[in-house]
Length: 212
Image (cartoon, rainbow, N blue to C red; front, side, top):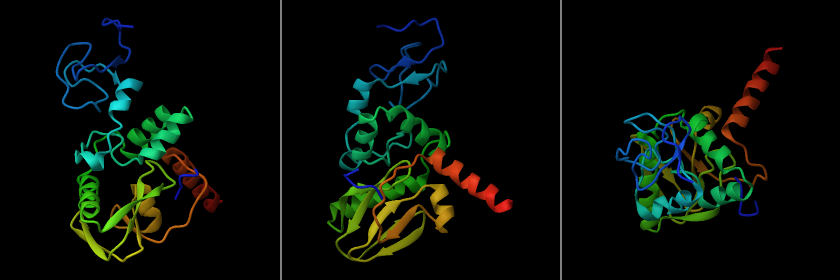
């Protein structure tokens, strides 16, 4: 848990191109999502410039739009701002896209989690905190203000007033023995933030030490 203290492009080459007006700048084909990394028509690599990134800053829980292609779907806005301030936003994006999402869209259970969180927020059952989980993709930590229940992936998760709720990546689930993406409990502050690739490397190193 980490707190709040914590020029036109040449169309003839293969380099990444800027997305403009949701059309591929290389072939002009319409793009169904601003979060695509490659044009589905011509295959050219796409990138989102900083000015487009500001547009993306709309809170997904406020908008109610849970796009499975949105690399920032689960990332806390403050966490994202911190990485931008440190000049590491691109590194975080790559970590989430390839080490958390594994180059695929978010799973149905991840979308269900966000929908349930929005439902509980709208009902006044939980509230946002100013903290986020210490590992990538750095999801927001929510706090229950009433006893309640949420259903994700066909599983029911009960929580009590005062419990904290946060999404968990596959690696964290395996480490904690969770059978789904939801962690419910009481959390303690941690000063360090870790990318998924860093945590994965640490776990592999620990495994090698145990084998010796």
